[in-house]
Amino acid sequence: MNILIITDLEGVAGVCDFESTYETGKYYEKAKELLTEEVNACCEGCIEKGVEEILVIDGHGSGGILPEKINKNAKLFHGRPVPTLWFFDQKWDGVILLAHHSMNGTEKGNLNHTYSSKSIVNMWLNREKIGEIGIEIYLAGYFGIPCILITGDEAATKEAEKYVPNIEKAIVKWGITRTSAISLSPEKAREIIKEKTKIAIERINEIRPVKINGKCEIIVEYISTSDAFVRSKREGFELIEPTKVKVEGIDFLDVFKKFFS
Ligand SMILES: [Zn+2]
Image 1 (tube, rainbow, N blue to C red):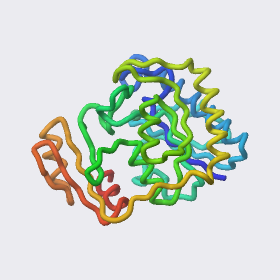
Image 2 (cartoon, rainbow, N blue to C red):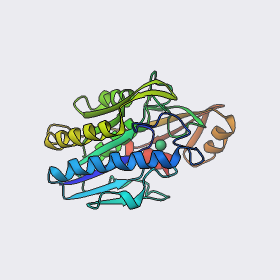
Image 3 (tube, protein in one colour):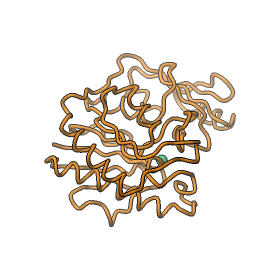
């Protein structure tokens, strides 16, 4: 069995504000250590359940994993740029969304944001608000791969459940505000992640890929009219309001590629 683990840094137990997730933040190095240990707990769960190949993608913009500490049985993709399709277009039996966060504006969503906490207000796919979790679930679904486990704060897990009602969840903290949370101890969080990983692998055949059919449209609302203006000059993009751009595609993959490449 082959498993793809996509990580982020905002959904880690013990991380609650942007001082931990921005490259210049004073707790950034500590946060990376905490994430790497959560990844390793997930890898241990995979290995105990017989997973042969694990690829970990360091999904946090500026990097979130300490390569020297990663589980010896996993491979790590790190650095930028990331291939446009984020390795989803390979043969995986399941995807794990590790240490993820909810979309911008989510009540009680710790570190909630949508791709950029500094520039994006909202994103819609076919007129429904969407964040990184939804996009990743649909991308996996496009290639016929189920997202079997999400870890992060409660709000992130609820967001994933909207798309995959029977996704396995490891809740490691509860957001109070965007920059405060009640967190499990890192040790407890790792225990739960390992346990839930094992259950997710056992249930892999019950959890279906989520596909979106037909034409797709992404609308993005920026904070700044400048960002919207600049984006609207790219091929396929249209400025629909001073802060909003729209891009269309023949299907999900097409619009995804246009938006993210
Ligand atoms: Zn991130």
